[in-house]
Image 1 (cartoon, rainbow, N blue to C red):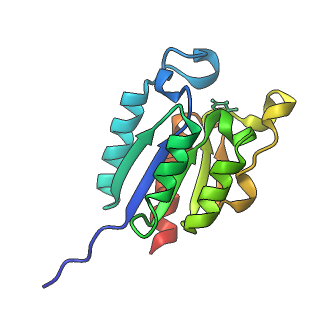
Image 2: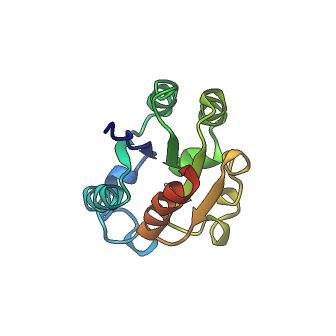
Length: 149
Ligand code: DQA
């Protein structure tokens, strides 16, 4: 019998998230990016989702990654980090590929500085999970599984 291919999810971590675990620990927590990625891989396996993880500090590289996902990825989970608040290019890239997305943030962007309350991504996302630390990502993965079937 032919087995059905697992759906593919791309997780994108934006700038400075490479420093998780060292960076502003009181806001972003002690978990490193490597530890978070390991947890995401385990969860994806449990959910029978195929997972690719990408981190970049560069807006252009994130745009290129989104562009090259066209036709290859079923869902994107993105923490655009500081680009959340500034990047029309990332917004346009997400609109161009028409892949459903969930926007995630470790911190609650609505309880911080005024400039963080504005996201250029939220209105084009299926949903937004903000403020639950690494659980924001893990819950997003569970939501993808529920939404994709
Ligand atoms: C962040 C929130 C952003 O405002 C900030 O620039 C980040 C991380 C978060 O995950 O809480 O780098 O996206």
